[in-house]
Length: 137
Image (tube, rainbow, N blue to C red; front, side):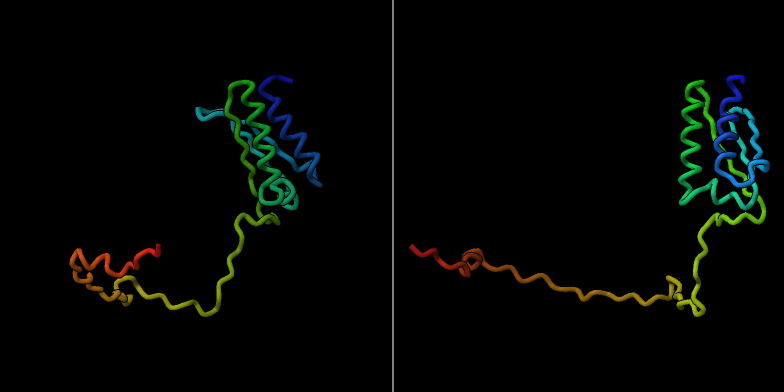
């Protein structure tokens, strides 16, 4: 096995161990000016397994690939190609209520102004300390 195929071999081995249809695993390697790109294709039913909960499995494989690439001073990235009909949701679906809240454009929104308080009139200097009680001896 050549040095440049170790990253491909790693992704292929790990992926085939995780999926239910290992014969559907396809791994390709391309090199360009940005580094090495490993493209992974699996069966639609195995997408959720490869991605993992909150993307943890994919993140772990990517981290290990970067370590493998660092040994050869290469930047290695993993792209997981999502096939049509996969069970994995790429973005969580948002619930939209049937009656959306009415929005008022910013120009038409009523502006509530706080009442302006006037500054208290200045007290003479001799009256400022007049409210403080004398300490008991």
